[in-house]
Image 1 (cartoon, rainbow, N blue to C red):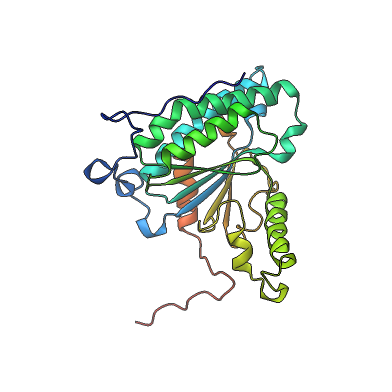
Image 2: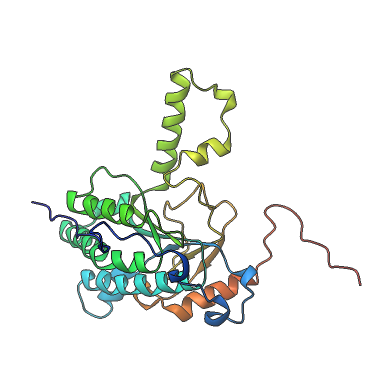
Amino acid sequence: MSPSPQPLPQSDDGHSAPCPTGRSLPIPTPELNLPDVPIERIPQHIAIIMDGNGRWAVERDRPRIFGHEQGAKSVRAIVTECAQLGIEALTLYSFSLENWKRPADEINFLMSLYVKYLLLERTEMIENNIQFIQAGRRDGLPAAVLAELDATVEATKACTGMKLILALNYGSRAEITDAIRTLAEDVQAGKLEPSAITEAMVSQRLYVPNIPDPDLLIRTAGQMRISNFLLWQISYTELYVSDQYWPDFDVPELHQAIRDFSQRDRRFGSLAEPPAQG
């Protein structure tokens, strides 16, 4: 039997406590956490391919699941720091559709780790005004994972701070296919003309609409590939590859990625602005 979701924090009247409001809201402090980067040069949406947990563990003669445990600690540190930097959205690539090809014992451990993480971090998200969102297919996920995902989404839906998007059971080609399928259904039903379909319509049918595309995509463990992640959304996203395995990717590494991003000249297909005339 699947465990029941952990009860949400209770207010004095016995109802689920909402995210903090008014004067109790946590205040981002980018000028203190990263004073050498102008606030306007900090990316508003960061996406991360969290790679290298297994290799990190194997190099230390430990089982791969030990690397996943340590990687979960990095998640907490990076989520906390991004919220303090005032970043609007953080998308973490946690488990892909292709990851089901891994050994059953590793998959089972990862699923139990998701349950544990959501149980432990739900109150922390509420206290830090973080809204939790899942991106990915629900089919195939264990009932216990779905229960904790739903409970965390519900508990944080009123939060107005950073959006934490967990790409779980996710594949970008599947996401685009699912989006196109819903448009095709509307065409078949006579609700939409094929010639009327726009890029904006496709974007609205993705798993997490109304979120700006990532400004910065970070991949750890030195791998130079996208791995079927946010293919539609990263058309003009800046890429940063860190040689650190995910368990070793810490706040200073995050700061370095943001510093590097802040020096980029983002043109979005246009020419660079000419220097101002004195």
